[in-house]
Length: 176
Image (cartoon, rainbow, N blue to C red):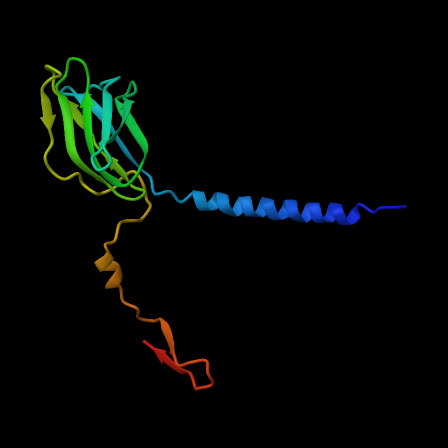
């Protein structure tokens, strides 16, 4: 009795090709992330970099925190943050602490918080009250957040709607 493995091999190859194409298609979907970053640099009053300053980023809505340290050039990056409002605290030994209590991070955006630390007691906190500029000079990507009202108010010009039924009555074509 002779059994042919050719149909089984072809089925397996087809299945492997379908799985590979599906994985490839799904990997491109993950590339569109909603996460953002808070980035910046920390310097002293003489514009010297402050290395090993502790950056604490707290999500004020979820009450979760992440920490990072500045590198030798005073730069830091806190990545993979979900859109929310954050409190940023920067502390280093021998310097007053810096605080930005209300930093809005939008979908897929970077927010830059640069700090100049004054020499002094680290128990003294310098709080920055004001809005962080929403100009993102770190990326050329376009994006933003729309409210429900803004979405509902979008014009529908140029779209085609069809009125009528499929029960044999004449369909009316209406261009808005």
